[in-house]
Image (tube, helix red, strand yellow):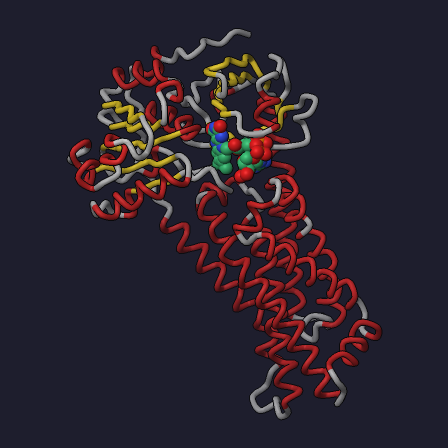
Length: 459
Ligand SMILES: Cc1cc2nc3c(=O)[nH]c(=O)nc-3n(C[C@H](O)[C@H](O)[C@H](O)COP(=O)(O)OP(=O)(O)OC[C@H]3O[C@@H](n4cnc5c(N)ncnc54)[C@H](O)[C@@H]3O)c2cc1C
C-alpha cells in the first residue's frame, strides 16, 4: 500500500474544531471514590476496635499497625488500578493525571508499609515482653506467610526508592520499567498474609467480603486494561508499517496502515505505545505521538533518533506488523478553553504540535524553537498547514544566548509576538528546558493555569 508522503492538504482545508470537553467532574468523582474506598477498607478495623478496648501500649501499637496495614494494602491496589491502562479511566481522568496521582501516592504506600511493619513488630514485642530482633524472628518463623510478606515489603521499598527521579534517570529505561513491574509480584507475595494473619480479614464477614471485592476490581482492571483491551484493538485494526521516510539525518517519519482506521478513535496530540514486531524491536513498547491527525487511511509518527531503539526503527521494512496500546493522552484540542491557541515546540515535540495544528480552530500561533535551521523538521508541511489553517508560524532559531531566542523567553518578548496570549490556550511540548522557560514566562504574563496544556514526553 502506498501512502501520501507529507501530503494532507485536501483534508486540512476543513476546519476541525471539536467541542470543548472538561473532565474536572470526573476527577472529583474519582477522588470521592478513592476516599470512599479508603473508608470501606478501614471499616473492619474501626468496627473491631471498640471504644475503650485499647488498654495497653502493646494494643495501641498493634491497632495502629493493623490500620496502617489496611491503608497500605488499599493504596497498593489503587496504584495498580491507576496504571491498569483501562481506556475509559484514562479518558475520564487523563493519562497525565493518572501518572501524577500514581507518583504522588507512591510515597504514601512506602510510608504506610514501613509503618505497618514497624508498628506490628513493636506491638507484638511489647505484648511478648521481648526485644525487637527476637520478635522479628518469631514473626518470621511462627506466623504463616510472613516471610513472603517481608520480602514483598522489601521489594516495594526498593521499587519506591528507584522511582525517585534522579535514581530513575540513572537507570536504563527498560531496566527501571521491568523492576517497577515486579510490583505485581509483591502483590502476590503480600496477599496471603493479609488473609492468614490480618485480624480483620481472616474471618468471614463484612471486612473480608469488602477486601475480596477490592481484589476482584483490581484483577478485572488489569485483565481488561492490559490484556483484553489491547488484544481487541490489535485484532480489529491489524496495524503495520506502510513506509519509513527519513526527514533528516536524525528524524524519521513512519507511516502506518491497517484495517478500519476510521473507527480508531484517536485524536491529534495523542500517543500510542508501539511494539514493532521486527528483530531487535519486538520486546520493547515505546510511546510516540501521532505527528498527523488521524485521517481514516493512515497514521504517522515522527521519531527522533536518541538511542538504540529509535536507531533500529529507521531500518524497519514496510509490512512490519505492529502491536499497539492506546490511544492515550489528553494533549488534544478537546482540552481547549479558549477559541484560539498558541503552540510552542522544540525537538521531537514538534510531532504532536504539528498534528494538533490540524485539529485546532484557525488562527493559532506556532512557535518552533531550534538551535539551527537544519533542526527544523517537517518545515514545509508546517508552512503549508499554517497557510491552510490561517496560523502564524514563527521559527525561532539560534543558541539560547542569542538575542532573538533570549528575548522570546521574556514577558516582553513573548507578548510582543503574541499580544493576546492571555486569551489563548497554550500547548507546550519539548525538552525540559524549553518547557520550564515557557512556563516561567506564562506565569509572569498571568496566563491562567487551566489554559496551559503540557505534553512532557514523560510517563
Ligand atoms: C507520551 C510520549 C510521547 C512521545 N512522543 C514522541 C514522538 O512523537 N517523537 C519522538 O521522537 N519521541 C517521542 N517520545 C520520546 C520517545 O518515547 C523516546 O525518545 C524513545 O522511547 C527513546 O527510545 P530509545 O531506546 O531510542 O532511547 P533511550 O536512550 O533508551 O531512551 C531515551 C529516553 O527515552 C525514554 N524512554 C526510553 N524508552 C522508553 C519507553 N519504552 N517508554 C517510555 N519512555 C522511554 C526515557 O526517558 C529515556 O531516558 C515520546 C515519549 C512519551 C512519554
